[in-house]
Length: 489
Image (cartoon, rainbow, N blue to C red):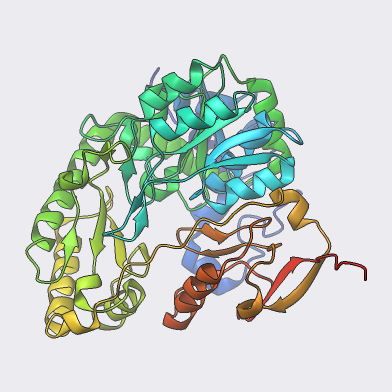
């Protein structure tokens, strides 16, 4: 295929150049009806291709023209049989994967540290999650992936599962032996779904971990916008034919997708595919080199640790993506959240994520030696400010217990509930999510029994200022739980 082509973007440009008189939405009519300041800032070019699904531009819901051609080129670039564009982010693609294979009552095997979009889809489907505990890293205070051993146990106990979902890579860039897991699951003739939100570059460089399509997975939701250059909210769903029905996938993704699809987002996917297909190897090579330089320099800064190949060697840490620069800051005696704020206030640096013990910085094809140099200068300043006397302030690593699931998430979410003080909720079944975003992994999800350790862990996160979200009560003082029937005396 000719990856120099951008069928959708080129059609949008041709259409804009023809300057048709528009009597259709959007109502801003090429920006003429927009707020003047916004129009000046965004620019007339962008507004001229903010269009709707008119005949010359195809329709994402049933593509037969330039969108179909763009998706075929994307499939070729990603090594897939089919690729579907998502303007609902990777969350929409993840939900599509699950709703394609799961109906009410069906089992799906998933890691417990999945993104909330996985659990939302499980609630929508009425599916029964079979949770696998991820491998826990007591030194860094994070979860890694799931192991082949744990997947084998889950399949032996639940051979009737409709799918197995794997996160690869994790938010922190850690990969399991995906090919081994795919081969094992396929021996049961069960499809493998991959949350590949943080893995778009791995398709384009041999120094990066194996991609889901290379491993033979059946479906993979991949964020092009996170690392591959497209605009926020634009992602792809890559598919291998055989165990899943591509026509059903199209039906499901259409059900989840707005009918007012953004052609700016779609065009950014089309052009990013071109850039990655033609230049992806060189772009990834540059990002890898900058990230490895940063990693080496960070490990020389007092009080900071940045894992690399030293983390490999276990079943759950089979490989890693070096462009995810994860920095352990606990030895500075401060939290990751405090570090994030300090870097913002003192060096005007915004990082990807912070947790209690780590910060995460993404090095992408958009970085240069100058941007990495600014990060290193800031981290040296951080060490100088906090390293002295840090030992006495150092936090002890705590990882929350995985709660017991007593009701299906759907039954809990739609069940009869009452609101009680969160600090008094131990032993009750929660009916809503509590998670820290990013990364959006639930600490508690509907149907789980709240433990005192969960309460203490969440309260501690709230008190240090980490972005705990999910409950209807945003202060996390009250929580919705399932009403309990009291014994009749």
